[in-house]
Length: 295
Image 1 (tube, rainbow, N blue to C red):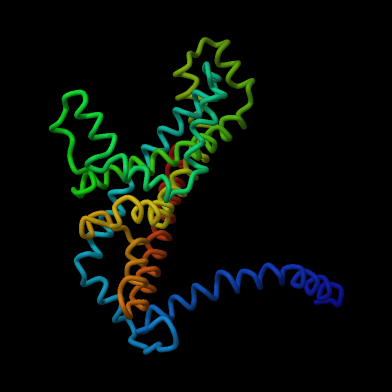
Image 2 (cartoon, one colour):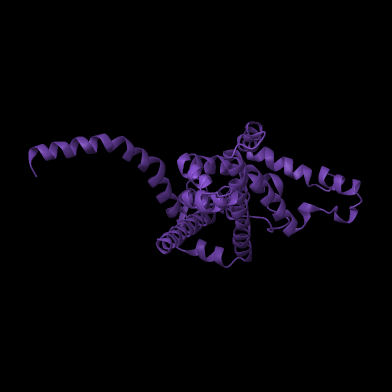
């Protein structure tokens, strides 16, 4: 290597040094520290007795872990629903249906409100004495006025409804951005050729924003595993029992509500990271195969 190339390499590394240092300080070191602490009996301060894989063995032997993991997969129901609703909203906005300016702001409003506030609103609305049961009783449907948050399946349904509602705006903006990147001449040519609204949507628009939809699914799946804590905390607090507890909420339970369980909480966090990585890789592989078949 010549002196000139060495100098260029040194300058390049010097320019990258701040980014590398920030990555090591805020990403690599915390991740490595959590992995190490997951192998210890950590008290949260100074005591870190190395116990190997005992935390992981303890977690996998607990029935509530598998119930919690199952809850996370059940929550996946919100992903296709929010993507579908986002596609419908973005299509209506793109076509500039009457009142589209007003509805554009209205749909995005839940996205700028705190998730905890939205969670408490849903908890109030679906409480036994809340507006939902009051509305049911007022139209003679008393038998449907139930304790929504006292049953596993209805409580999960309320959480899923909250997840879909808060993500309508984000999904709509994302899909609308993808649609706006399509050349108007393509759709105009389709119109001239006699394609109706549904033909333009399903045969032209949706295939052309396939990558945007793929990104939406990958992000939403990862978010369903890692971003539900404020909703679970404010709507059901994980109950009844562990019936609506998710993995990210279980990490909080182990870390801050159980004595000397911080090592186990770190192990749960590592398991959660591994699951999200595996799901993301699986989605990418499925998407790549689908693209190969379409070509």
